[in-house]
Image 1 (cartoon, rainbow, N blue to C red):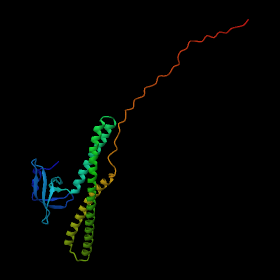
Image 2 (image 1 turned 180 degrees about the vertical axis):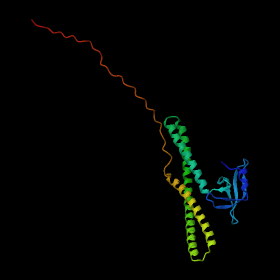
Image 3 (image 1 turned 120 degrees about the vertical axis):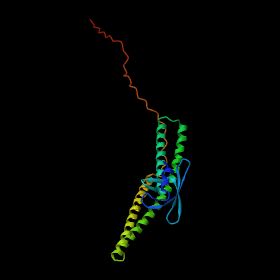
Image 4 (image 1 turned 90 degrees about the vertical axis):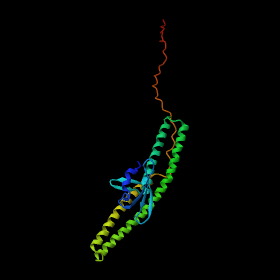
Length: 238
């Protein structure tokens, strides 16, 4: 359900976060339609750059405004659409198999849903490519953070970093590691789900209506036709 301007206006001028706790930037503008639904959010990223994000990427959690990553929104939309179209295809085939839908109507409806499946295949590939790139970026970030952490430990142990500055840097690195690992876990989970879907397999095969088998009636036992009794005469010679 879209959030409304009434709900989000209190965040104007405040910092918003991503789902992993990273500060993303400051809200500098909010767009809404005539139904009061938020359609876009203007963000100052903290480095002088401005970004316009669609309203469907924004949610409210407690007292925080959360901006979901684009890949997460796209993956969730794909999952919902794919689930709906596959369930409808199964229901359509079941109805046709028992003769509840005429063949021409069935074929029209099935073609519509097959076209939707083919379109979703293209979206699936795009999302997988995006997730692969994000995984690579996160792996680089994790490696850099771990390298900095090890270097700081070495320089602190050698007396070149004082305790206060070392602790501040270590806390920042630890938070960065936790957030990057949490996002990587989500990315890998969605990537695994998409990979399990067989992209080369088309929609479920069309069903042909099968006649309902008739219950066989018991065959009455056959009886031999009745015959007149046979009279046997014995003749005695004298």
